[in-house]
Length: 239
Image 1 (cartoon, rainbow, N blue to C red):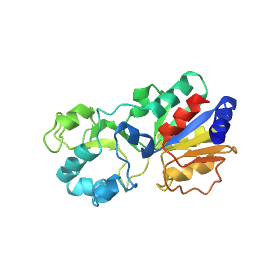
Image 2: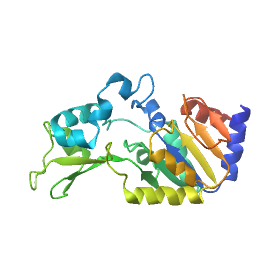
Image 3: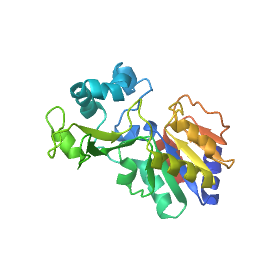
Image 4: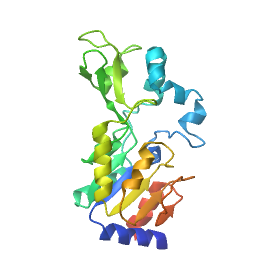
C-alpha cells in the first residue's frame, strides 16, 4: 500500500504524464499477450515468423488466416486501466499515450493523444493504389482481401517484423518523452526493439513500471509493481 500511496503522490504532482503501454494492459480485455506463459508465441510457435514482412509477401493467404484469428479482436472493450488513463487526459494531466498495441483500446476508452508505434488493425491500404479500407472489410473478406479499385492485395497498417516504424510515430514518441515529467510503463517487458530504446529519451527521474513478470530495463525505476495493472488501479482508487 505504501508504494501505491507514493504512486498517487507522483500522479498528483505531475503535469505532463506519459504512459508507455504494451500487450499486458490489454490482457484483462481478453486479448492475449505475446511472451508470457499463455502468450501468442507460446501457443503458436510459428507466430513470430507469420507476422513478418517476408511471410506476408510469401504466403498472404496463410498470413491472413493467422492474422484474422489471432491478431484482430474488434469486440474487445477497454478495461479499467485504459479508462483510468483516458480520465487523466480529460483532467489535463496527460501529455500522451505511447502504445505498442494495435488493438485501438486506448481510443475506445476515450484517449485522444495516442501514438501507435506499431500501427493499428483499424487502418488498411492497398499495396498498389493505396486505397484505404476499414477492419470490417478485412474480416469480411474470404481469404486474402483484395482492393475493389485495382485488385491489389490489401495490407494492414500494422508494423510487421522486418519493417521500420512509422517516422511520425517515432518523432512523436521522442518529443513526448523529452517533455514528460512522469513516465509510467504498463504491460511490457521492454524487450521489443526499437520501441523499448525510446525510453532513453525520457529526461526526468520518476519512472513507474507496472508489469506482471520479468522486466528488462537499463534505467532504474522509482517504483516497480510486479502485478496485474487492474489490481494496481483498484488499490490506487482506494487511496
